[in-house]
Image (cartoon, rainbow, N blue to C red; front, side, top):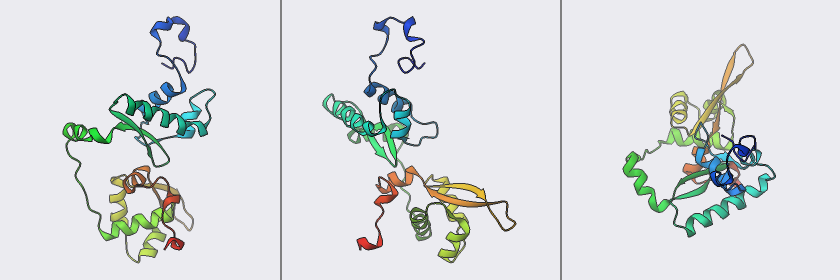
Length: 193
């Protein structure tokens, strides 16, 4: 039910039966529910679900909630993940998640995978053909593996020259999260060296 966001059902319940609604409680509920595809929820998506709240206000609401969580000893925190936000178990309690789900197995990437990730990160939307041309070798297997690991996203786009579709690759929020980047703009540039 969307009580408080849209008031049609709110009149049927007494005020003592309703959760106190505020931008913070709505934000918390949105992040608790999360996205069906497990991606982070952007500030624009969050603001779009709230009346009278602008996208620019979301980060301060996140900071307020995190301060409350820390002061009251809550087990969760809101973290920036890629271009959005996600509600997750606090770092100091991550061991409980590991016990429940089992330890996450660390996987090392080979040089071919690192090369592909770098090319896609610096050239989002690069076609498979262009990537293979730049690498100088076939990369389909490596790209498929990175898509399976949800580090890259593959989109089919109309292609010219007699082909129906071409494959284009994009970095995912998961890749940004794993690399500790807030966005692709945080990637080092040549002038940084």
